[in-house]
Length: 128
Image (cartoon, rainbow, N blue to C red):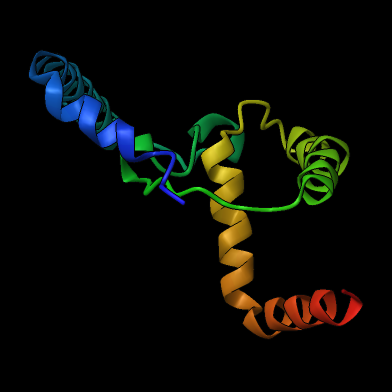
């Protein structure tokens, strides 16, 4: 089976003008961010709350990879996201959570409890 994301690399390589435009935009964004950061340091900034700080990391810091899960697993995850995770964040005034932050947290949790991951895989195999 081929990788469904292979064509993304081919499209990027075929359209160099888009990359040039993106680099210009990214550079301008980074420069603005640097200026804002320096201004905050000069002003003796006070620690911001999670609601004020924005995403924990920028999009360019991510490594995008597909995750493969059964439909009912995705549905259960999305339900928990809507009914538990998002409301918990909202109680802390975080209403602009990014999907990348949620996915990163899920993977960090899996990294912290690798034995539990192995248990779940074994449990699923025993049921089949």
